[in-house]
Amino acid sequence: MSSRDVSPNLALDQLVARRRAEGAAIVHLGFGESRLPVFRPLVSRLLEGASRNAYGPVAGSADARAAVAGYFTRRRMPTDADQTVLAPGSKPLLMALQLVLPGDVLLARPSWVTYAPQARLAGKQVFGVPIPDECGGVPEPEALRETIRSARASGHNPRILILTTPDNPTGTVASPALVRELCEIAESEDLLILSDEIYRDIVHDPWRPVLSPAEVVPDRTIVLTGLSKSIALGGWRIGAARFPSGPWGERIRDEVLAVASEIWSTLAGPMQAVAEYVFAEPPEVVRRIAADTRLHGIVANAVHEIMVGAGALCRPPTGGFYVYPDFEPLRERLDWHGVTDSASLQRVLLDDFGVAVLGGHHLGDDPGALRFRAATSMLYGQTAEQREAALYAERPLSLPHIRDELDLLEEKLSVFVSSGVTKGAAVFPAGVR
Image 1 (cartoon, helix red, strand yellow):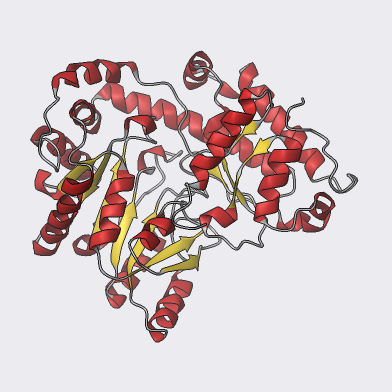
Image 2 (tube, rainbow, N blue to C red):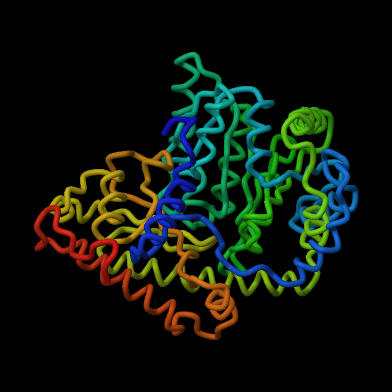
C-alpha cells in the first residue's frame, strides 16, 4: 500500500457499505470500530460544551488536560497537566510525532495499518519486525536486535520504536516481562518509544497485568490514548498524548504543538467538555467501559473458537476486539478457491463467501501468508437497539441477531475450508444467504 492510498481499513468499510446498499448479505469483520451506542451522559456533556466556539489553547483546556493527567496518574504514570496534549484523535498526534521525532521507525509485523504510511509520509524508513508467538503489538526481542543491527549496517537510523498493547490486529496483550525486555533494548540502543495504549482499558480479564513502557523508561516514552475504542467515540475524534517530564519531553511537546497549530489548531471545544468528563473517570463511566469490555471479550472469544474450529491457528484474544487467524495449515485446501496469499484470501472471502476481513498484507505482514484481521465488534447488531441489547444482555451470545451472525460465519468458513469445492465456485455468493 502506498502512503498516498486511502487507508485499507476505511476503504474496506466503504466497500462493504456500498455492497450492502446493493442488497448483499455480508458478515462484516473488516473495520476496527467499537460499534456500540453512545453513552447517553456524553450527549449531555456535548450539548453543554456547544457554546465553546472559541479556538482555545492548542494543547487543550486546562481542565481537560488536568483530567488526562489524572487518567495517566491512576495508571502508575504520574503526570502533570503540562505533559499532556489533546487532539482530534490519536492519529494526528501520531502524525505530528512522526514529523518531529528524528530517525527511522521500528514496527511489529503485523501492526495497525496507519503506522507505516504515516512514517513514510514523514520521509522515514520503516523496518518491520516479527512478533512473538504468544502476542502481537510488540516485536520479538532478538529479532528486534538483529533488525537494528542490520538497518544501521545499511546506513539507516532506526530510532523510533512503536509498541501497541493491547494490540490491533491480534487482540493480545504483551506480558510485563516482555515489555521490560523491549525497554532494555530501547535503552541500550537509544530508541524513543511511542506506546499506543488506546486499547488499554479493554483488557478482557481485569486482573491481567498491563505494563506501560512509560513505567519502565519514562524519560524516553511518549504514550498515546483516546476515546475511540474504550467508550465507542470513534466519530467524535478525541485523542491525547503524555510526554516525558523534563527538557526533552518539553521540547518534543512544544514541537508537536507547533505542528498542531498549523494543522488542527485545537480539539473542538465541545469535545474538550466530553474529554474532561470521561478522562476524569466518574463511576458511571467506569461501569460503562466495564460493560463494553465484557461484551468485547465474550464475542472475540466466540469468534476465536470459530476460527480454530475451521482449522486456523489463532492466538486467544485477551484485549480489544480482534482476532488474527492464520490459515496456513489449510493452504492446500484453499488452493481450490484460488487462495494463495493474504490478498486473494481477503478477496475470495468477500466476493465468493460474503465475509469481509482485512488481509494481513495491509498490516505489514508477509503478503504470502494466509492471515487476516477479524474485527469482532462488528457483530453486535445492525441497529442501535440491537447494539444496546448486546451491551447489557446477560448472555449476549444467545441474542438472535448475534447468534445468527456467528452461526452464519461458522457455516461460511466451514464450506470455505472444505477441500471438495471446485476452484472458483461461489457456494455463498455475497448477495445470497
